Amino acid sequence: MPQITVDYSAELADTFDRPAFALALHPLVAETVDAKIAACKTRFRRAEETVVADAPGGDALVHVDISLLAGRTPEGKARLTESVLALLTAHLEAVTGTALHLSVEARDLDASYRRG
Image (tube, rainbow, N blue to C red; front, side, top):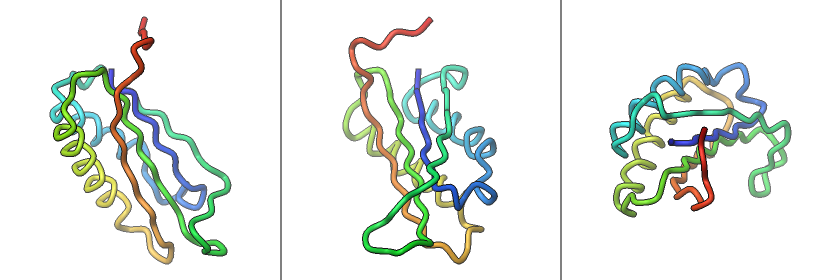
């Protein structure tokens, strides 16, 4: 059920170990929102061009979007996003020479969501 999308700047393609991040992320999400690890699905989308504020270049961003079945409290979602942000920061600590802009959002899936 947790549908996770990670958008990341192309500058991070060689330094962001995406499979390792996902394998650490899934148990964290499952434990925090009372889901099964097997239900976690993560896809990564490389953004070839990103612009942050008025920086001419060199800044990189990563945004993690976690979509959940409805029913989690705002406090539970806040705990989840804080934990994921800490995990993301740890996975990118080796990145140097690039300003990083990291963000995480947890949201409810639309009522039309179906899985098969």
